[in-house]
Length: 223
Image (cartoon, rainbow, N blue to C red):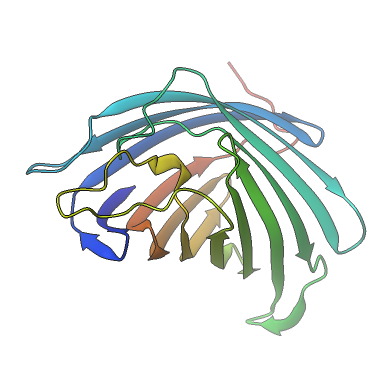
């Protein structure tokens, strides 16, 4: 992730931050368990923050409720400690619940293949008690996925600029809002992704590139 614009208290700044992430996740049945390593750094020039590294434990579970609805639950727990009062904090601790709607049969035919739409509504609660409302809509067609996601926190810290700075700001607990656009492409067991985030209130404008490798169900690792 490359962050090139930050908005706080209605004021814009242009630092250069980077977040490099490596995740390893395994699953059995409908549950998953994994680890996320994150390195938060900054580019050349004058920018606030101290580079950090963090490790998070992740867990997830999904339950099919009907032919078109599914409940997704997920959690992250920071393991190594972080300083949320500086912008390069490297860990998050939160829980997420999403109610997902999907069309398993698809509709229409575009180049001989159906389009599979989906959407979700959910919430994220972090360890400080901040509650975020989130939602998204998207579609999948022949390995190509597109998604629009919006989020808005219902509470949290509101930074105030005092003429010289923002004081003691908890960057992991900002009262924020924004939206993101994402595009992904699946080819066999690989998935390439790109996401652009746009802040509306107290957030960052960033670009994320991702590469995911997934071992298909039933496939065995060979020596």
